[in-house]
Image (cartoon, rainbow, N blue to C red; front, side, top):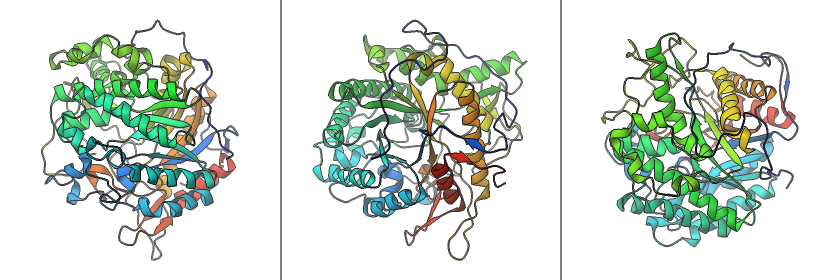
Length: 512
């Protein structure tokens, strides 16, 4: 095994260490030039920079009824009329459960050094009852295959597939689920901890809490501000409990969490109303998780925004100390930023799946804040392309959160959906995806050159896969999957990214 990730050993720079239990206000920044110092020429990354690819269990594994696995909340949600485009599900997905040797060999041949995957809670603990040896056996095989190929296993414990039996008991809005998550983390570590050294507790708890329990766009599809805020607190509590338990079991392990972030820019930075609107979304998206986990306190302005919905009723003595248990790594997921105003957009972008089922705003404290298109380039999912926002985000995180605590950052998801058009052999010349990844990698290097401690990048996604409420309607993969035959065909972007990973550098004059 020639790739190692060590636990962080001390501060890596950044701003002055704040007193424990303090949160930070929103401070708007202005967009930078579209291309910074690393704009067009060859860009070399540090030799130990980690080049990876990512997937999630429900999106790729399939085998939904195999070896004791039972329903997760996503299996049940996908059956709700109008919840998922074409009522598609993850019953088969990319069939990685049976095809993982092929996928590992593919990564090895491309030169990818790390694979970020998630374990399925519904496979390991069906129905939330007894732990399932056959489910753990699968991850045994996957980890051994990765190690045999010289690929670092980067394990995420929760990527949204709560066992339906636990949802039936109340789900994440119930405090007991946090303790059940800790037990699941320990059981998984007992089986895999001798070979897996990097453990991520949660992927994007914002989506799990607010898309799942407040907006209803994701499983389990509830629409309650109170439930979403309770779920958010208990997700973070589960994270902290798991970190404490795994740290006790394996002091040398690299422990972390992955959060999704957006840069919320006031549409008119000179208009106090727009600045206030951007503050609300920044609090409801970024700081509501970053501050408790990385600073040990909820932001006061966010608590004021959500005061009617009972968040503080769930916060008990010692919770924030547990939630802010020291971690080694922060995973940063970034897809786009937003221009935010205090009035609705005349023609807002439709970035969600076109579904008949009614949903709600996923922002409990986001009243009076509206996202406006800014004329930036768009992916085929109508998401604005804003690489320079990633530079600003990483520098903000370094200054305010990770630097003072010696926490390393990895960009654990970044990618784009385009409506790929394969040729007769199934090959895709996806130059737009190459340009997207190239631009964001240059933005990362800009941030690194200015002091951000970023140590790796994981492209989302290794494979075309099940894209949640979009079903199979949007493709993010570096590798095309023919869902009828399960054939994998590396796209132009996959070949390009594999060369970047092998060389450790971006070529001059990237494909446009």
